[in-house]
Image 1: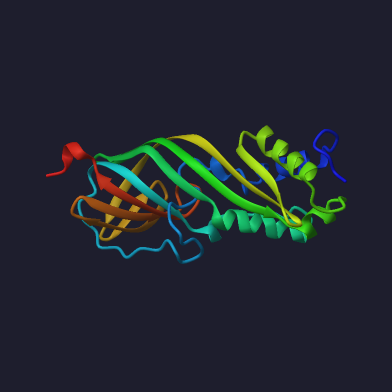
Image 2 (image 1 turned 90 degrees about the vertical axis):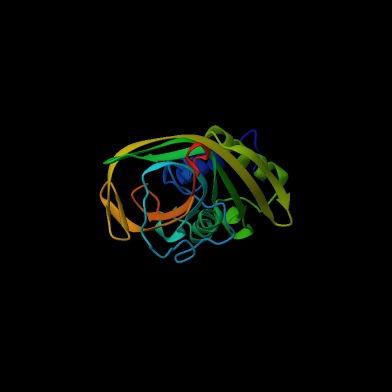
Length: 223
């Protein structure tokens, strides 16, 4: 039975996952999840309508396109499934995030709260050399996540370890942009955008993970 005090394997495994951006996708600074119940290849798509994007906007929500997450294999199929499920349900909650568009540049600043919920299955646990789930195993997993800067808990749930974790990460982006019809190009990536009064949405993968951003014009600029 794997115990938190002596097992280094789970710490190494969670470090491997974090290094490849699955459970620790908070390091992808500007978009890694969605404050939305829908995630997946098409859940975050929007229809472009164009409009005047200049000015300062508050970021109200971010929806990640989970298919844009690159997930290298851990070498264990059952554990790859755990990592995939975690990335599919990852959410990012913008905290005091804003984006400002001038004539040619945009800046994005603020903080993201990243949320993960994932389940280490019996198949994944036993494939790593353990005898199955125990609270000791879950404690070891929790220690591995904590060592990677993720706050949360891993609790025994039947024959699995159910974990939740959160991380806050600062956001700081300054790049060029341009508008062409209903397409908004941020840096080198182009996607549809739509301004509707004092709200707007745009779709981009230039922020390292593809998805869509929902915006509200900053209060000082609202007519």
